[in-house]
Length: 492
Image (tube, rainbow, N blue to C red; front, side, top):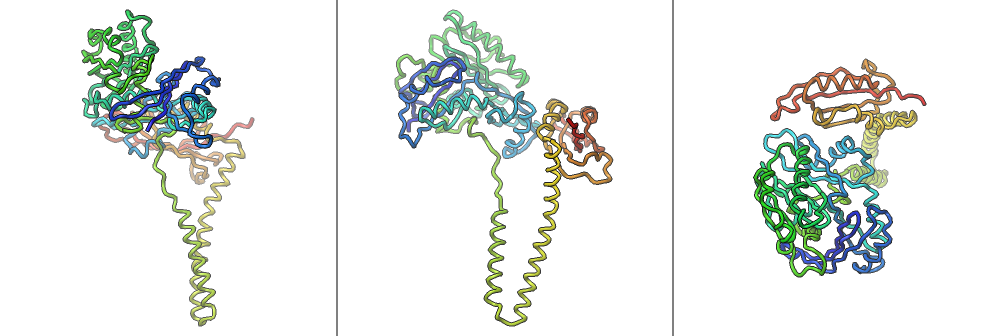
């Protein structure tokens, strides 16, 4: 089935219809539409989209997959404790609130878990974000063209997908090295660092200005990417560099560049032969369609962990059995009432037995109501937060400014509590709320420094006892639980 895909760049759109044929993509109806760089006014794009992608009907919109190039997204590497994949979505959002420089609600995000390194006490994920405004522009433009936005991919993962489908990379690759796939386009160069089939880093840079400057440009961008990758990957070795582009472009880069890249093996790939099948549309270079080919193949294969910024990974939904139990309890009550109605003319002892059963159930219900008083009390205390204009999101921001970086300490559980502390707790103040922080630190000094900063910020701190634990990586060997009370709000 033909797929409709768009590479949405700052100053142009590459629009195409394509089908997946085995491990390759076949393109037809490829068009390029220009736009003003980063402009939110996209009315000029509506007619080209309508002309290329004929809608099924007014009521049924055709789905479209959009691919964002590297320069439109932000990628962060985040370190987490060794937790199951199902627990990552909830933890990543809390870590994102501390990592990002913008509010979490202002971006669309998704992530990919990276392979766990043997002997490591932590695991890493790549967090990919894009501003909500950018997604809104795309969605509005497609709606005006009677199209539906079905997925938002990222070019680095599309490059990894097409390389894996072509057999250029595999999950059996050496875990101690990384491989670099350089897509050499006329408008920009995109470098994707892979460990096996997992994307571990991505870089986008300017392209060459003349054929004589191709090698100089790729050297410069490889150097910049290597320096940036070292900040997130640490020390790493490049085992292979795959140059993807037209033969005359890749031939302009000599094997001498491997001298600066750990002696990496240099390979050259013609995307027209490796990734695409059939004849290319006139005026379109094969390198321009590499990421779109990866998006087409991604819909048919899951060889690569990829992101979808409008359909992100989520934690498995927990089944809520409360409604079922409520319905069962109601049904039980109805059946008992019916039994009373049909047996009320029976013997007195049977009526007394039924009455005893009802009284027992009534006692149980009263106990349930009494148990619910704690919830009502908690609701009242939460109301105090609102009444006194205490915003828990503000407390998150305050704590973010106080908490040390993940390189010194990480928090694996943060709990806000609206329940008043017991009367014998020495740190009790207003009684409006408290926070429980559970985490790991590299040293007891880091914990004591955090405690000092919390007290200086006005938080009450309950006495704590660090717990020293053996760690395989000897990085985070101190476990601690900090219970703090919120400072008195300042009357404005």
